[in-house]
Length: 297
Image 1 (cartoon, rainbow, N blue to C red):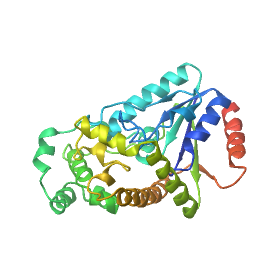
Image 2: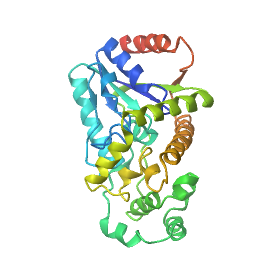
Image 3: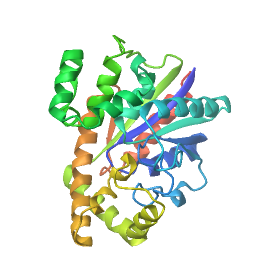
Image 4: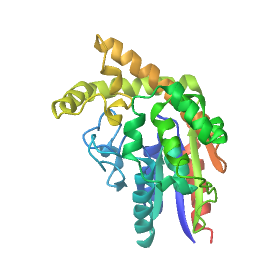
C-alpha cells in the first residue's frame, strides 16, 4: 500500500524543518500545502526558506504568477500528480503545510471540488452586497450556509463560490479518505504565547531579509492590491499603512489571528497525532512514530 506522511500545524511551528529531517531519514520529498507559496515572486513574505531544505526536493511552490487564478481544485489536481510520481519512484511523499483546506481536500476529495468557475455569474455577483449574497445562498442551500464559519459567511468570494456550486444542483460531498494510501498525519502545536513569540521573531527576520523590496518589486511588475494573491499575510498589511511600524504591527497581529484559525481548523480534523514543539524530545518522538508506521507492512 502506498504511504503518505502529512505534517501540519500553525505557522511558525517548524513544519518544514521537521519535514526535511524526516525526508533525509526516510528518503522522502516534500510537497507544500501552503496557499501562499504557490505564487512566483512572493518568497520572503510566504517563507520559502529554500536554504533550509538541505537539498531535499520541495514541490508545489512557484506554481503560478500572482495575477493567475489558483484554487483548491488546481492544488488537488497538481499535488495528486506530484504525490503519485514520488510514490512511483519508491520515495515517501511528505505533505507539509498549514492550509488546512488544501490538506482536507487532498485527503478527503469531494465532488464539488472540480465544479469549474462560472465567469458570467461571478461578474454578475461581483458588486452584490454580502447581505444579498448570504440571502441568495440561504435560498439555494440553507444547510450549506449554516455549516460555513462566521468568517466565510462574511467573505464575498467564498459566498459566490458556494452559490456557483449550489446553482449546479445537488452534488453530495465525498468524505472517504483516499483508499489507495496509508496516511499518517502529524500536527505541530505550541502554547499561544510561544507561538506569538515565534511569529514575531519570524516577521522581524523577514523584514531584515528585504520584505519591503519584495513588495515594491511586485508592484513594479504591475501586480495590484486587488489581486487575491496580494491579500496574503505579509503583503496586504502594507496597502494603507502610514509607516513601517504600523504595517509590521498589523502583520504580527494578523499572523497571530491566522495561527489561531489554523489551530481551530486542524483540531477539528480526525486522526492527527499532535506534538508540542516546546517539548525537547518532540523531534525524536516524531521520528520514532514515523519509523514504526513507515516500516509496518
